Length: 95
Image 1: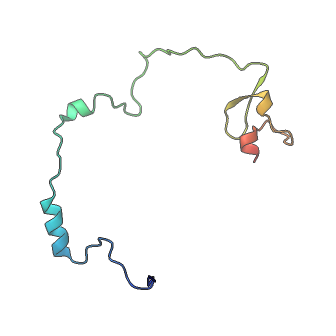
Image 2: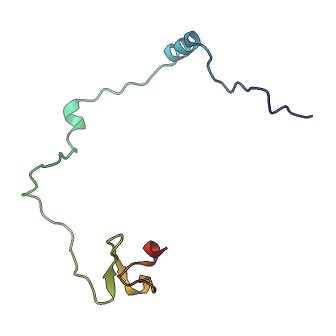
Image 3: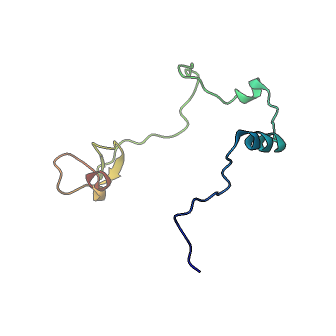
């Protein structure tokens, strides 16, 4: 059977505002009651005082077989160095 692709389709599109209002009021929405202070407990504000915080990871200096890409500023192994560039650029950024 041939299908006419030029005919307009109605894929659940609501044409009038009244139908939209009845559908939106008939569906129930789930409301979550949350205390504002509980929601803001894990939120860090910019400019917050972090002087009492300690660094919990060990930072290693750059090794002899590593380089810092001048485009993405990530540390890569020398095997990732792009061959045809004058500045140290990784293969991913050289593309």
